[in-house]
Image (cartoon, rainbow, N blue to C red; front, side):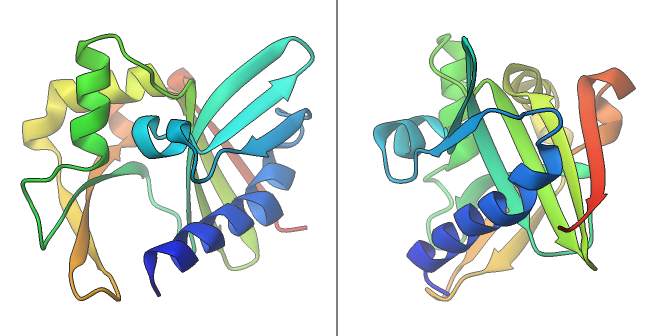
Length: 170
């Protein structure tokens, strides 16, 4: 599946499965920023607005068994020096640049949605502090190479720093 189809599928899965799953916590309006500068440069996939509060959101949805970690894109195997999320978000953290307000990682598995929500700054500070010790995994891409992801285990955070929501799919 090419990049555009993967992005579209991820956005559709977020709308179809994750937003309904977290609607008790986030009952307001969701707006995709797919393809915008906020998305391409700052990793902001969605804006969430409820009354006078607006949050920027980084989101990832997996169609797989739930894992106990967040995952961030490190690089493509065809161009390992061209860092992806890790490079740009750590740079933003260093210069106090734009970061999403929160990060939402969702898993769709066996008619259930598993969601983890964390403050993005805390996530990226933890990545910066532990980068040399974090493990990675790769996902083959139709373009012939692999995207390498870095795992940020939930155990690196205090229990109250991650909001976990598990619900059957509607």
